[in-house]
Image (tube, rainbow, N blue to C red; front, side):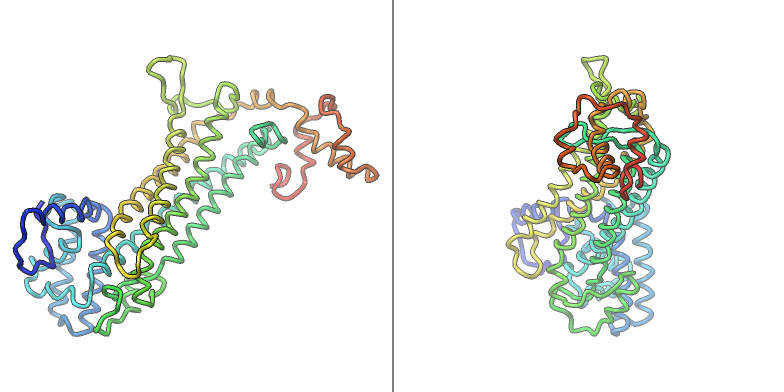
Length: 422
C-alpha cells in the first residue's frame, strides 16, 4: 500500500520504504476510521477555533474550515471513506481532505499541533465516551439483578465455601450480591472516567507551543472536566490512562465470569438448581442429550482475554522513556477490543437472566440439615449465655440436628447484609 506521508520532504525512497511504512502503520487507518476519526474531526474543529483566536486563521478562513469539517464528518458518517485509502492514519487523511476542500488554507491546521497531540486527544475522548456507555449498561444490569433479587426474596438457596455446602441463604440474597458487585464495578469505572477526564489538546509533541492557545477554552468546548496541565505529562499519561480504564474493564469481567461459572455449575445435572430455556443453550454434534451453556463458557474465556490486555499494556509501557514512543500505537487496538468484549458480555449476561429459571424443588431437596449448625450454635449462645461458642462447636452432633424449617433459620440471621436482613 502506498502511504501518503505528511512528513515527506521529497527524498526518493526505494520499495523497501513501503514495507517499513506498512509495517508501522498496520491496521491503524481502519481502526481510526471505525472508532476514532469522529473524535479527531471534533477536536480539529475546536482547534481551528483556537487558531482563529491566535490569528492563524481569519474569520472567513475559519468558516471555510468549519464547513469543510462538517462535510468530512458527513462523509465519514455515510461510510464514504475508502478503508484502503493511502493514508497511514486518520490524521493524515483528515488534513488531506481538508486541503482538498479549502486549498492552502487547510495547510494551516497543523500549526502548533502534533499528531501525538491529536491521537492522545481523540483516544481520551473515546475512553470517556466508552466508559460512560459501559457505566450506563452496568447500571442496567445491576437493576436487572435487583429485580430478580426482589422476585426471589423468600426462596431458599445454598451458600458454598470451598465448593461445599456451608450455610443457608436465599436466592434473593444471591442475586443481590451480584447487584452490589455490578454497582461497585460501575462506581469504580466512574472514578476512572473522572480521573482521565482531562484535556491534553494544545500541548503539541509534549513540549508546548509558541502559540498562546486558550487551552481552558479548548477543554471546555470538548467537554472535558479540566485541562491536563503539564505538556510532558500529557504524553506520558498515554498508556497509563488506558491501563486504568482496562483495569476497570477487568473488574467488570471478574464479576461476569463469576456469575457465569456459578451458572455452569448450578445448571449441571448434578446440581439442577436452575432450569435453562433451550434458547440459551447449544447442543453437541455427537451427544443428543447435551444442553451446553456455551454462552457462559465464552464469557469466562473472554474475561481472560480482557485481563490479558491489561498485562499487555503494562508490558508495552514498561521501560519506555519519557515522551511519545511509537510503541504506544499498539494500545489503540487493545482498548477497542476490551471495550467491545465488555459491552457484549454485559448485554449477554443481562439477557441470559431471563432464561435461567430457579428450580426451587431441587434446591430444597439438596439442603442438608447440617448446614444449620452454625446458626443453631449462635442462637443457643444468645439464649444460654453460660455456654460458649467454642464448647458448643465441639459438642454439637452435626449428624443428629433436630428438624428446622429453612425459613426459620433465615429469620434468625439478623446482621446487616445477611440473608435475613439485606
